[in-house]
Length: 270
Ligand code: THG
Image 1 (cartoon, rainbow, N blue to C red):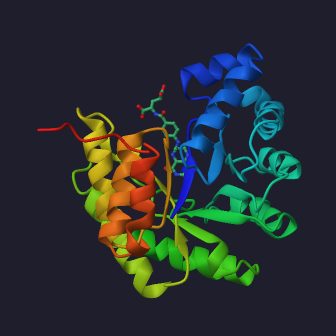
Image 2 (image 1 turned 180 degrees about the vertical axis):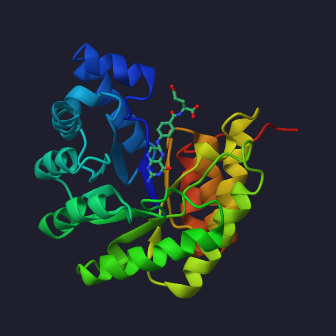
C-alpha cells in the first residue's frame, strides 16, 4: 500500500496563505505531520498559483526537503513545472502526477519519466475528456498503456488512476471505479493503482464515512495506492484493518503496531 499525503495543495486555504506569506514553518509542520502519520510520499500541488506555479513548486519542494526525507509526488498538468520540481527531488524515486493520453501532454511529460526514472500516475482520460463508464476508461487505458510501454515505462512504475467522481452528480460514479479496477486487474495485472478519495463524497454529508467505506470497497478489488489525508486517523485505521482482514498483514503485526502507537482513533467504548 502506497500512501501519498495530499495536504500540501494550494487549493487548501491555509497552504495558499502560507505560500503567499512565505511562511515556511507552516509548510514544514504539515510535511512532518503527514510523514509521522504514515505517508510514504508527499504530493505537492500549487496549481492555483497559475502565474508563479514553477517558482512556488521550487520553494515548496526545497522547504519540505529541509525537514523530511520522503520522495515527492509532483502534481501539475504543466510539464515545465513538473521538470522544475523533479530536478530538485533529493530523496528516493520521485512520482509524476500525472500523465494522460492527451496527445500534447503525453509528448511533453513522457521524456521526464525516463530522465528522472520516475513513477508515473496515468489518468484514464484523453483529448475527449473523462469517460463516464468503465468501458470508456478501459478504452483510453489500452491506448495509454501501449504508449507508456512503447516509451519504456515498466509496469511496476505505472500507477493507473481510474478517476473518482462525485456520486452526488453521477450516482454510478463509485460503481464505475470498482468496475474499472476489476478490468485493470484482469488485463494489466502488474500495474499499480493510485486515486484520490475525497471526490467520491463531494456535495454530501458525512463525507468521512463515505470516504472510508470507499477505501474498503476499492482495496478489496486491488487498489494499492491512495492520495489522502494521512493525519485522518480513522481513515488510516480503516486501511490497516482492511489489510489485516484481507490477509495482507502477517500476524496482524501492522494492525497491532498501528494500534499501539495510536495511529488510528479508538472506537467509542460501549
Ligand atoms: N488523482 C490524482 N491527483 C490528485 C487527485 C486525484 N491530486 C489532487 C487531488 N485529487 C487530491 N488532493 C487533494 C488535496 C486536498 C483536498 C482534497 C484532495 C482537500 N479537500 C477539502 C475537502 O475535500 O473537503 C477541501 C479543501 C480545504 O481543506 O480547504 O483538502 O484524484 N492523481
